[in-house]
Every structure is written in structure tokens, then in C-alpha cells.
Length: 105
Image (cartoon, rainbow, N blue to C red; front, side, top):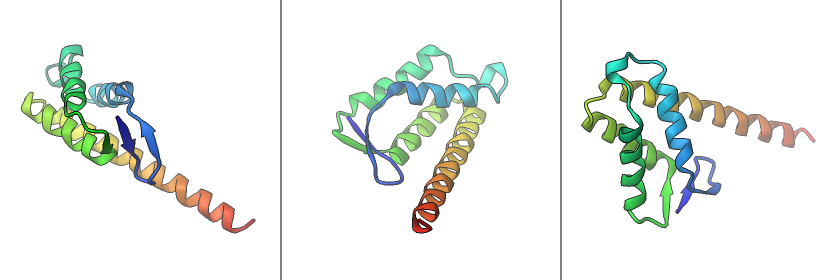
């Protein structure tokens, strides 16, 4: 499966990126709200079982949020969204600084 990034790049799907993002959010919530390995694996399998050839990174993030809510991990879902937003903001800032640098050359 290919993932279409916010900047239009097309990358190979990497299930570890989902696990890492959920783990980062896990660090921000209490034990009862944390996703365990099976919770995370079920989310990754759900995405993979969609059978899509291409998927937007935003759609993956929406699915992860939805699945966390279905697992009643409400605070974790919020932290995951916050983490994803922060990452997107940083990526956008990096793209803009690269464009500005290139235009000054």
C-alpha cells in the first residue's frame, strides 16, 4: 500500500509509524487509557485489511482516532490527534522553510 503524504509525496506504508505515533500518545495518558500491543495491532490490521492501493496519511490518522474511540480510549485518541497535528505542523514548517531557502538561491 502507498501512503500519500501531506506534501504530495508517495511513500510505502509503514505499520511501525502507526505504532510509534500511538506509543507517543500512550506516554501522555494514564494506564487505563493506554493502548496495549493487541489494541495497536488490531488498528494496523484493520488499515491493512482495507485492501487499498493508496491512502492519504490523513485518512490513516482518522481511522486510528476512530478505532481508539471504539476501544473507549478517549483521552488517548485526543492525545493521538494532538501528536498528529503537531507532527503535521512541523512537517509544514519544514516544507515552507525549504521552499524559502530554495527561492533565495
